[in-house]
Length: 261
Image (cartoon, rainbow, N blue to C red; front, side, top):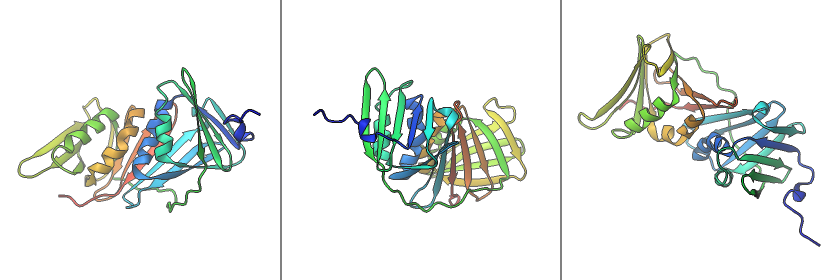
């Protein structure tokens, strides 16, 4: 008797999802993998939701992939999918841009199938993931801006040359990304309302705050899926960054402030 195929081992999945692009899926969840070892994906009628906070409680990330972002989307009620993120990301890396990713979810298994030139199948356990996540965060911000994502990535790379901390400052019609190192070492990226890369800026009160560059560097792979990044902050308060991909997925990153050097 032939052995059953991997699909046959999940004969009646509770969720069946097909994402159109393996590369985009990897970029959406890669930042989570920098914060967490495991994550619980909640699959609902409106889409897939996952929230994770790092053990040090410095950073929290929310990912939402609406059902409209999928080529196929079938779910029975609300389904939990618990995955080891390193394993999941390494599997999705086996796909390329334009390769579809099929997820079949049962109570105890998750089948991941990548349709490329060949069909690649992987079977992972659906694990129970316990995490302490606060309710939905709603913060008031003194500064709200929208910046071309490439500028944010370059500002982080420039800043880490001289410091471990990124300073974000806003006043009048100017938004600055700065870093100060030993002696006279410093770097500054200055954007004004006349800058083409600053799409929007609203300042209700001038603000200055500092954030850990390593956390930003670890999570900014998600900037690759968005043309622009919403940046929201107040003096010495958590930073909120929102990334929206063209197909409708959204990632929100909250990062606690650090002391100004």
